[in-house]
Image (cartoon, rainbow, N blue to C red; front, side):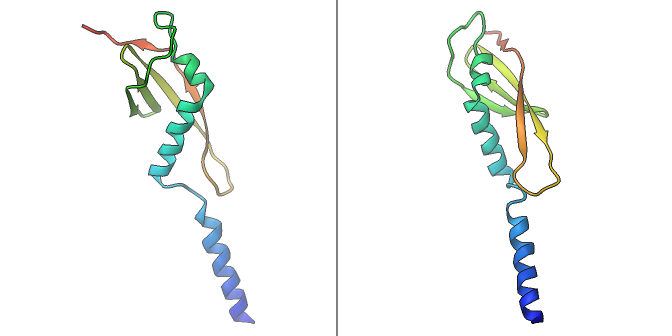
Length: 105
């Protein structure tokens, strides 16, 4: 009888923590995919000087989120984490800044 309780307790501990947090690689992959697929990103990536959407050249991690570059400008996107007391993937949302022109010589 005690053996059954031990087995049940073992599986509860192992499987309840298994999905608690993604590894940093998978979390950042999830964040970048969410960033690129967000319709607000497409709108923020258009500027008055460049009304069409240009291809993304580079994505850099910053202290507050990501900086996304095109050939002519860059855009900062702050990531807003929503922490929960329950285990599971981290929920987040985006705050997009205005695009800033890159000085091209």
